[in-house]
Length: 283
Ligand SMILES: Nc1ncnc2c1ncn2[C@@H]1O[C@H](COP(=O)(O)OP(=O)(O)OP(=O)(O)O)[C@@H](O)[C@H]1O
Image (tube, rainbow, N blue to C red; front, side, top):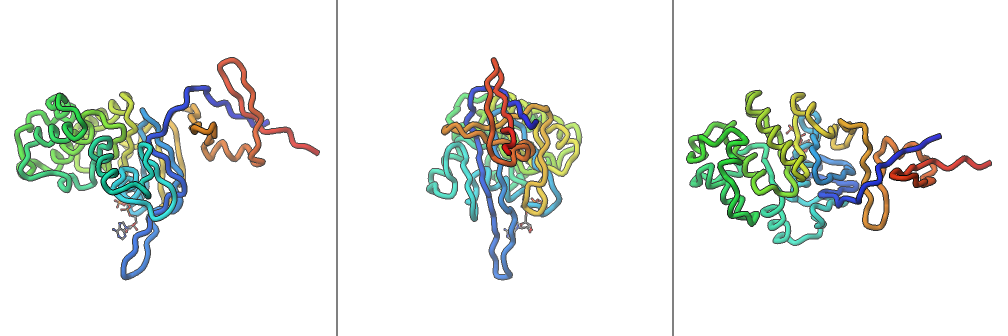
């Protein structure tokens, strides 16, 4: 008998929801399908790692999830906003106030005239937190001694850690980091991963991309991309956490969905548990 036990928890609003998400780059030489129909839900308090070979679509996915670009097709809701239909102004406010983003090349998000401390203070102000503990945020990524330095006098790894500090200050609801440990030694990579994990524990939805096994093994949830398609998903805990939308619809992960080929389910309530069972075959 096919059954699936789903923890009866309070419905949690997803931070990101995608359906059939597609990204096509068009150029004079033709079209490149970077993402082909990605279905994904990111919940508050989660740490998700996206892995996959070079060119598999990781940066394209993270750019969309951070509301930096619009999808070519499919649905993308970020913090309640439809990214395809939202105005440019609304997306800019969303990015400034509620989304921390670490670009693959950290230097692209830095201002030459600001010190490391000023960068973090500026982002905290965008997020409406003028009393953020800038020293603590820099210290979390091992950058407190560099608070007075400008980007030109910082190494690539220091700039990357500064980008992480800017992404994390004032605890945005969504943190998106594109290979945030690529330029770091093991000790600093661990420190950055610790800081990202703390953000997830404190309620942010954190999603990062990486090739590094040291990063992927720390993922609460590991998604593998291949040729723009999500090829597998692994959760560290064995618990199945599904999403119930406001209309009461339950989205089962693909591994459970196959247990219900008729797309019909018997729902049984038993104390604290709700049990989903495939109906008996008739005739
Ligand atoms: N601006 C662009 N114009 C045209 N094609 C692009 C553009 N950006 C990415 N692509 C293509 O889209 C596909 C996915 O690229 P993407 O950068 O998302 O992969 P990735 O997994 O992040 O790679 P890497 O690990 O090397 O950073 C690749 O085939 C890439 O060449």
